[in-house]
Figure 1 (cartoon, rainbow, N blue to C red):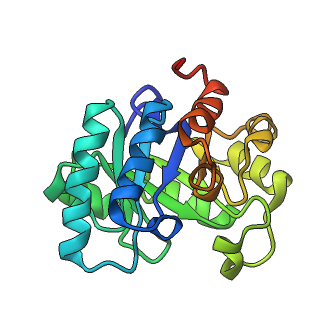
Figure 2 (figure 1 turned 180 degrees about the vertical axis):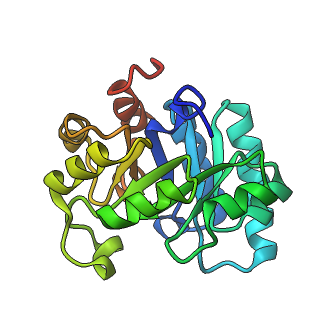
Length: 215
């Protein structure tokens, strides 16, 4: 089991989405801007790429995250995470159990996506190191999971499990404090940073909620 100190870098958990950028070079530049702004955890989540391209992109992201002493987490695929030297894997609710992944990949941080109180309990019993709980707010990327969970549900989850809980779904900068007030360990997000015209500064502003680095 990872300690809270081990997971402290995950308090602002930035999830990749190449669709926001025209071309890989621009995407990688944006990633580096976020890392320069203090982001310490990046999840590689590009579901439309074949394994060979995920590995190639993962190697590039591993170089960048290592340069800025940030963690790299790979979506779903522990085998790819190990292959590229990533720090962890983030499991979906349909993935293998965290305990099973840990047996085969003991050095990886194991995260899990959850969308209900029951799912959060299950992820904890199955050995996850941290969970994301979503969607907290209205967001197009989580519309398939139904209505937003809201802050009350977030509070119920943070009080019910002993794992670090990252609030995900519709996160914007001004919503961070109210998520933390409900007991969230941190936040996870996609669009609000990638859509920013000033990614480095916006990332810094997010990190400032957690005593992040100054520019």
